[in-house]
Image (cartoon, rainbow, N blue to C red; front, side, top):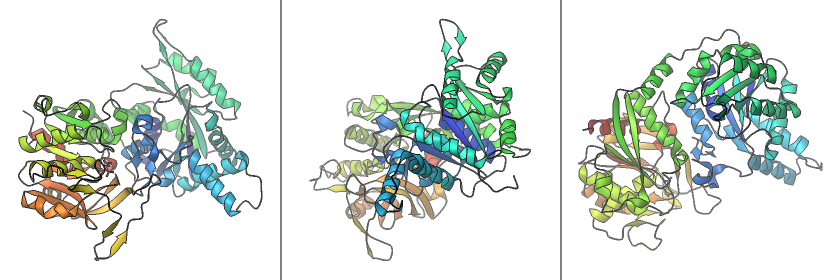
Length: 544
Ligand code: GLN
């Protein structure tokens, strides 16, 4: 640990093209530094104009990750939390849209005392202030700049990190640039030219990278690494390879093997870092080569776009690693499930998972899957919409309420099992008006809320706690009007939050749980989420 409490910054930029895994590289470095005893945080600065990704389609931007304090953020924040095992907040992700909104708000308030508002200095200063705010109280802040060097909208962000480097001086900042080293099949060669051009582009705007991370399909030989060092003007031990690996959790270990901490420590004057990755290492071994296997049916409507369920698929991997089990996910497009094919689809499945979602596309297929799990006593975990639909399925097929539905899908349904409320009764019996107003209209319950667990329930056995806190992202709620009827027939409410139904389970079933919250948002490789771990254990028992 350094004597100096000045936060030090590691800026990570990307070159050549997007989707090279900048987020994983940043999270990997953060993990190594945290496991060396430093206090590390991480920030994603996104140059796009949306104020946050909350309104973006998952097809457009992958999953929307929700922080404990209720921010809807980029999916890279999910990777950061899963690697770092820290709760991040709305300070850890901002966009151009957010920056402009606050500058314009200040301008309207007269904070700039009549000055002309310009990109330089006002927008750039706002970016710098936000980076510094996220860094407060940490030894190191890793700042990932979204997009690729050369993007027009990225320029103010790059100018901000250039200026910070000038201001903070030696030992306080480094620039890491991640690029692609493509393999050209016809020539049978890995090519360094795009990297040289990308570094040239960075230099043109006044940033010289200290370290280059090379993403490639295969390992690079020493000669190639040295060529990159010479042509890009970095030290030879500052060219780090990041080739395609079986698991993203191998990347910190791959970096460590190349002794990435030595140059980082020299640049930032961090002294002799002693890193302990032994626990991580043994978990990674069980991700890559576990001894057991379990087949989980993942029922959703975006199964072609697995990025939209990133946190959940990672959470299954975490639980699997802890149980020395490979999770074989069978992706089931809910739009293609009907009462004719349901038995065939799920015939050798060990557990069924219905994920969250919005809108009525594929809802009938999800209900078929739930019915199959309930009747055949297959372990079932329903998340958010997956909980709401298991109540609808139960109401339809056990309580015989044929038109049972959510008002999300039918506003006029007589049996509104899932309904929209804008007021609720809190613990003290007082009426409360909900405050989480969504800009799209209606209400959105976002972020971490406490949930009280009913003793003697399966959920209590799993969490072994009376009170838990999990994260939410939903507009609709289970209607308490039907609660006693549900309980009469064996579906009990096992979790509640200020009078809201947070979790349900079936009494007469080995594992049938629906949760209104998203347990996947709090799962980490080193600390899997209890209800997902419980579901996997139950599914493992079911392996034939
Ligand atoms: N569409 C449902 C709601 O808004 C469920 C949301 C979700 O699964 N995240 O309440």
